[in-house]
Amino acid sequence: MESDVTTKAPLFITSAWAAGGEERFRANVPLETLGRSIENAGGAKVSVAVLVIEGFPLFSPAFLEKLSSLGLTVIDYGKPFAEIAKRFPRIGSRYSPYERNCFLRWLAFKNWLAEKSMGGQVWHIDADMSIHAPLEQIAEDTRGKTFMTDGGPAFVSIANPDWFTIYERELESFEKDIGGYSAKAAAAKEQCLANDYGLFNRSDYRNPLGSDQDLLEYLVSSRTLPQSQRTEIECLPFRFIENPMVMAGNIPPIRGDNRGGIISGGKRVPFIHYQGYFYDFAKIYLALDRLALTRLPGARKLITFKVGGVRYHVSRPTRFLWRAARLLGSKDLSKLETIERLYRDNGRMLMELLRFIQRQRSQI
Image 1: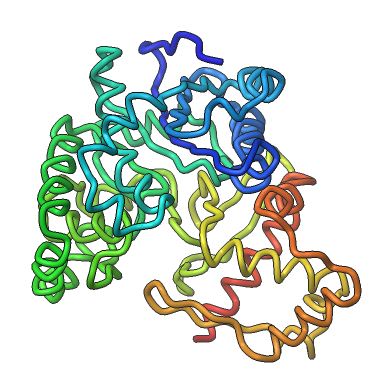
Image 2: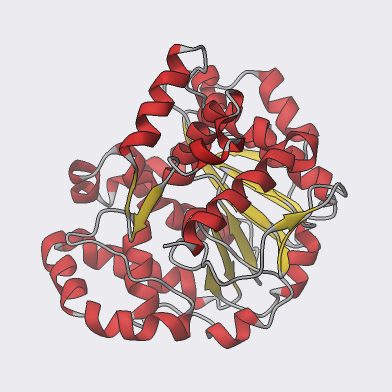
């Protein structure tokens, strides 16, 4: 259900695509939780546009009405996106549909904004997030800044109008020679790593480049894409955490209260991103918590993980305990179920999980 998107309020954008039906989509792309968290955090004065780039006909009117009631403007962008995809056959044949869509979503945003004559700053948020601060406050405090969160595009503030144009140019070069472009990025990695800290970035990208996150990490630290300096970002009122699993052990202890699920790590944490291995560890943690294993000192010592770049694994004792928990009735939770359980009671379980992760990281 598409309605007019006002340009007077700050504009936040995200994307989604569906395969396998509405039920499967809702379990894995928790737009309802995103909308509810925005509403609970006091984000009613912003515009949030959801570009559905594939699978819009799979959605029922009731589901679309539910998303609209939560303040999300859902836009059927399937036909224009199909035209974009035709321009990138090599990316389409080399990568999974998911990774292809991640690469191309930024062009969908660029074209849609141009079609609607929407200039000025925009903010991107991933759909698998919970918001813990008013979006209008996030927009106000990052106004004039262009940056993506440390090592990934879960949150991207785009004030520089050249950002989308540069990305499209680089993606076209990547399409022409994926191997050669990736080799160029690999050859520049040492310099990119040297640039990372000052640019609030992590050059964890692979060779060949395997995702839009890899590409964006390279483009930021090679100084191809505009990016505000770390000093400009770290002086902001918020602490931006792209992936809680790689939280630095030296930040102030994570804490929270009962006023709307506020999270603080020295500064207020505006959102939590449930991508990849944070979601994987979260569902393991919840399964073990049902058996009180996360609260028993002896068992807690067995629940460990390691993170290095894009690599993550939990220890053998952790996997053993998780298998035991599943045999005792702790089912494998979907992303929606995981976020809902962590988010309930103003995020009480989420706070416990974040503190648990931080203790683990501080000991590494």
